[in-house]
Image 1 (cartoon, rainbow over the protein chains, first blue to last red):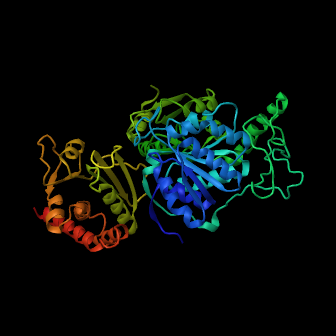
Image 2 (cartoon, chains in turn brown, purple; image 1 turned 135 degrees about the vertical axis):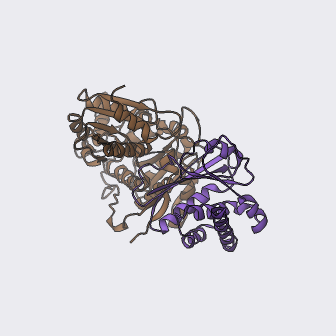
Image 3 (spheres, each protein chain N blue to C red; image 1 turned 60 degrees about the horizontal axis):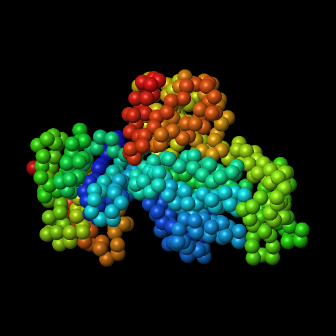
Length: 377
Length: 178
């Protein structure tokens, strides 16, 4: 039986990655994500993996894309400034369908902001940071144990659907240490990408169905295929045909749309009979949980909805709850990002109130409690 | 029951490690614990703060809201966090100048001097402070805290750190009598 130990969020992300089969890490250390690179540099050589400190974040994501093409499970970790630099190659990984995991431990921005200060300002960047329609999955851990669980999930999704997956952590979750009991290894599901049986007739971008995922051949094992950021046909070579390019974009997007009910991950507390629903993710959700419990103790019917998959957003369960509540409050450590998605999903079924904070200090529970108790502003 | 600790001082004093060991001690005692921190971009100097919340129950909010114990090793930290204190006890190093405007109950303990003089190593001030916190709060048993210290400190420094921790518990016992 694994024993309880004090573990840091960044450490849990790293252990999750190693458990999922990480064997290649390239990165450029940046606060507040540095512990991930540090621990990877210690642990990967012990299991025959590789750690490379690159010249910058562009090189880092390029290196993990290359490593993944050879069949390795590859990851990088960064924070906002580095994540911004990685955006072009996020698009490259999406269109070339190379599974990668990027951990973004958010800090306050824009630009270099303050290295050790909390924010949740990368919500929209994680979804739309690179240009063009592209698939991406974004997972947001709300405590240390979830850093472990969701990093494994990130690898599983990346492998299964051949998409870039972002673990959207933040300074508080990343640096916080909590009592954690890790699960028994044999209880975990680890997914590996599906490979073709033989090189003959291999078409690297041929999917068997609408929104299907092509088989992925590892480089260095006798397969020859072309990888490009240009729009391409089933052979992987560039095309100038609009309908072929359009069909590719459609299939890439459909991969994640179709999978959404399977990927969907969220937690609720006291949500079934609540009047006031608080929707929060990541570190803000810890404050929200405390506020909801205090409101309940005071006799107010408050509830919590905490998405762990941020993109794609868990629309259906929120829509269902929205039709039953009187108000929805969205606290986030930014001036309003996830709230736009909430407003779109709720579509007027209940009033949606923003609760924004950008002073780098985690919400105090009483700030959210005041909003629960105070009614509309 | 939820007990909140805030450990404050200057970067490099090792208060983060003291907070980690306190939290690990609580876990060894079968309790729940969360440790958080805030610090500037400097590796040394600048202000540094570690917080530990210990509880028998689930801990939803990880930060201290109204600390039961504030440790302040520098006058700056005392002035910044002392004025936020409500019900809790302030433990300051004896080099800290007390401010009459800070009204929370305060005890002054020679932590830095004990480390430098009695133990002979300034660097173990954090472990002396940990002993003081352990003794004053009673949240973690001394034997458990000793085990937690041994789990964390570098090989070859075990005796030194145990001596420091015990000296801290003695300071706490003296402060309780005073």
